[in-house]
Length: 186
Image (cartoon, rainbow, N blue to C red):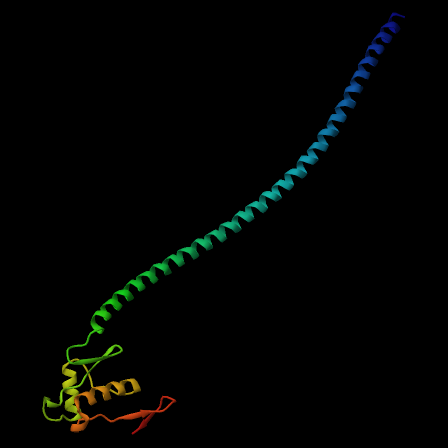
């Protein structure tokens, strides 16, 4: 009987231990289910964050490309601006030089727009041939005038009338201009 009592006490002790272990096992299983659910939520959140990160990286790369293009465009515009400023400076310098040289004609010459015209005095000597007249003009760095506009013809007529060249036989072929701007011989 002593064995039976011993077994009962031992069984009763094991039974209480089993109840405690069973409770612990249920609690552990509940904790494990909770951990598994948390793990699933964290895994889903991680995947979502990775996608968001990848989208952010793509957006950053795209913005970097746009920024690089804008920087290159800005640099191109800056170079073009510098070239235009240089060209403007050169043109202003040239205009200044031209104004200094073009606003005045040598003494005895007549200015019309940006060209100077010379009408030798009638007393300057014998009449010259066309070729000889041209040689004389070339010595001065000029050439014989071509009267190809009404404006040039008016200048020539005014000068010639003033110096009476036409009356002395040293005239210029005069033409008229019709309303369409075409020459008509007089």
